[in-house]
Amino acid sequence: MRIVSEKAQQEAAEKLVASLNKMDGVESSLDIRTSGTQNRPIVNASVSPENWRKVAEQLKEKHLVDHCSMITGIHWPESSDKKWEVVYHFLRTGIRDPVIEEGLVIPNIVDFSKVKGKNVPLEIQISVKIGETRTPSVASVQDLWVGADWNEKETWDLVGIDFEGHDGMRRVLNPHESPVGFHPLQKQHKLRYHGFEEMYDDAQGFMRKPVDSSRVK
Image 1 (tube, rainbow, N blue to C red):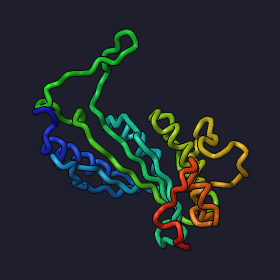
Image 2 (image 1 turned 30 degrees about the horizontal axis):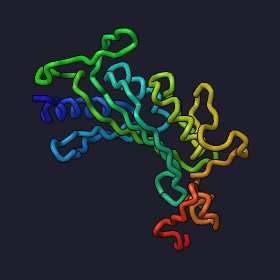
Image 3 (image 1 turned 45 degrees about the vertical axis):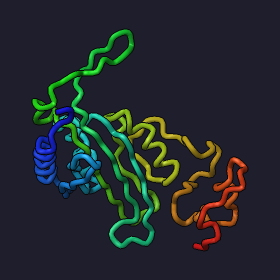
């Protein structure tokens, strides 16, 4: 077998869900998705902002989650249960101390049928919901996963959610001279439909327009 079995992945995911549910401020569940060839168990968890840093450390140190692939920030001004949300996408790759020769990482070749426990690859999705506030923030995990560095910067730059403890926070997509407090993906800006469609929809000058260019919001 060229991949870790679905059974092994589901058992590992169920153990992680059970462990997370024992922690304060965490509600975790198992979701099954498909890639077209095999079902993939995804560990989902909702974590309160005040408990997020402790949970992150447990994921890194106890459960060997070793890669942060994406962080998404969302502004929900009309939602009743949240006004802001940070969604983290993590991977546990199961790769331990790969050999490096002349600056190149040499792939580890393993017998997939023997991969067990915390060496089983997993996908984890974490949601942190934030209530009504003009200054949304959560604890940074930049020091735990190198992949969080750019993603936290991008989320702050675009959405305005701050990451407490992030070293070197700065603009990465907007101009550095952007006004303080300007974060374009906050819903009050409505950039997509403010009368300057060509700025966003035809940047290369090909006279292209989106299918909903006449739509008014």
